[in-house]
Length: 154
Length: 154
DNA sequence: AGTGAAATTTATCTAAC
DNA sequence: GTTAGATAAATTTCACT
Image (cartoon, rainbow over all chains, first blue to last red; front, top):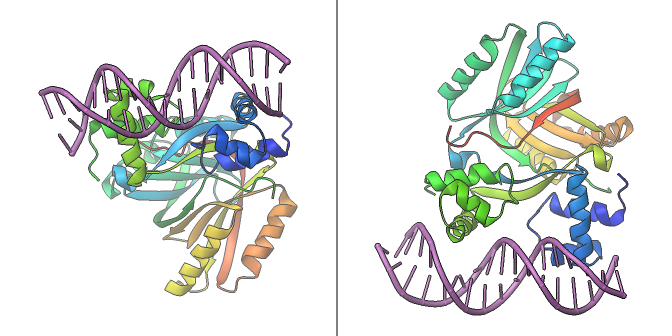
């Protein structure tokens, strides 16, 4: 899908705040409110906007721990990789999961209520999975930034 | 802030989709639409809901590369750490930034248009910063999961 | 306190052009 | 792409438990 300057301006606005009214969006895009709505509808239909979500404070709902986990598989075979991807997708404790090159095969961001909860997760997710060679956990001390946004037309 | 079962149900709903109408939310929370709106307003004011955003497809706007970067500082001194946190916050290329324990001091998720763009970022962000001992980049081959949500009451 | 129903305000959608 | 009118949703008010 081709994106013009107005589309990019709208995307940049809603990736920071998707509760702006059409009138507010009209100003940033220099367009009418109706045009903005039509464009955003299309951007959602085309998958340029993948989702619209509220970012909930993990601490406020009792997820006091966040972990960065680097995972190495026994073999980087397509079926093994795919099986692990499926496991990531269906496991709610895993917030983010990336398949990467380099020292590790996967990087996960996992939330847990406490250390016991995390340990329970690792038993369930890692120790019962024979495809996994090993994993390394880094405990998050401070979430410095979690903007889920990136430069649009910069 | 104290959260009851209805609050948690609302949070779980909107962390997956914040464009649900109050009538739809009323069903999931077993409450009236008015009550849902009031609760969500308070959850936003209290910071339980930190933000409401659209998740934009990085590829669709030309951010074809995502990198996981593990950063080590020369010394883990408070002022150095704080200065680096400030740099993270003001740098738009950095989507996520965590201060962590373990092998690295920081884990960043960075997007870039292409390799040249990423290299330019590393020069600007890392090589000019004398507090940084080193960094290790892992290229993302597949973003398996990016839900930004976690289990609520589970 | 927190709820829910009705009235008001506000925003969104559906045409028309 | 816009403007204007119809539709729908979010706020506000208020009576209630």
